[in-house]
Structures are given as structure tokens and as C-alpha cells.
Image 1 (tube, rainbow, N blue to C red):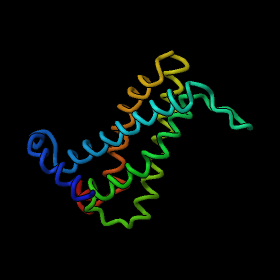
Image 2 (spheres, one colour):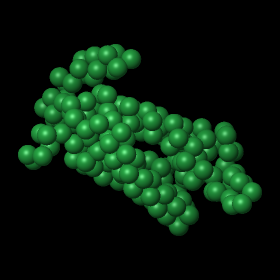
Image 3 (cartoon, rainbow, N blue to C red):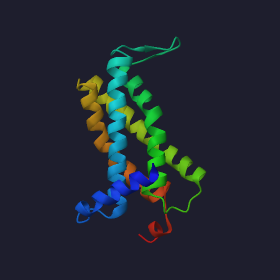
Length: 161
């Protein structure tokens, strides 16, 4: 599967070479696909699993858009990490557990950003949850790229920048 993904990305990279270096292109492609996967999971969870209803967990209740967000995260986190580690930032010399820990820390910050943006857009600006998720995603992507490239999957080359 890894080789298939790399070959596919290498096939399309020449069309984007003028705009991105190879790592940035791979990040955009892999991150974009994982984001689409995450939004799809959010949509399915919100509309068809939760049926737009609160999730009652006996001791507390989670609003449907936040529950759908958490459900989607449980699948998109491991796929995102695998893509970043094995496809995008494969030249990183950090140990896998260090990468995972750093990635997890940065994802936690991204989760907080997602939560705040979703809560604000849905509950205060009354936007549709899926539209809110799309808007939120754009803000979080910039933060995520910078932290992943320079912290989670840091390389010796990154030290000289």
C-alpha cells in the first residue's frame, strides 16, 4: 500500500512542482485525503449514526456535532499519523514513539482548536455543522503543517531553516 501511495503521488507531483516542494506536495495530498476522510466520517456519524441527536453517556451528554467530531477523530488520527510518518516525513530520524508522542501533542492542540471553532460556529453563529467543520479545517491545517514539519517529524534539514 505504501508503494502504491508513493507511486501515485510521484506520478502527480510534476504537475505541482512549480508550486510546492515534494514534501509540501505530499503533505497537501496525504493531509487532504485524510481530511476528506475525516469530514466524510463526521458527516456519516452526525447524520446516520447519531441522527443529529445528543449522545447521552449517562454521566454527561455530548452534542451531536462534537460527538461526530470525536468519532471521526478515532479513525482519522491513526491514518493521519501513518501517512505523515511513512509517506510525507519519512526522512525524519526521530524514533517512532517520539514522533507519535509529538504528533499526539500537536493533534491535541488541533483538537482544542477544532472544538473551539466548531462550538463557536455551530452554537453562536448558527452555521450548519458540516459547513462549520469545513471552515474549521482550513484554520487547523496551517497550524498542523507548521508543527508537523518543524516539531513532530523534525529532520536535521529542518534545523538549518
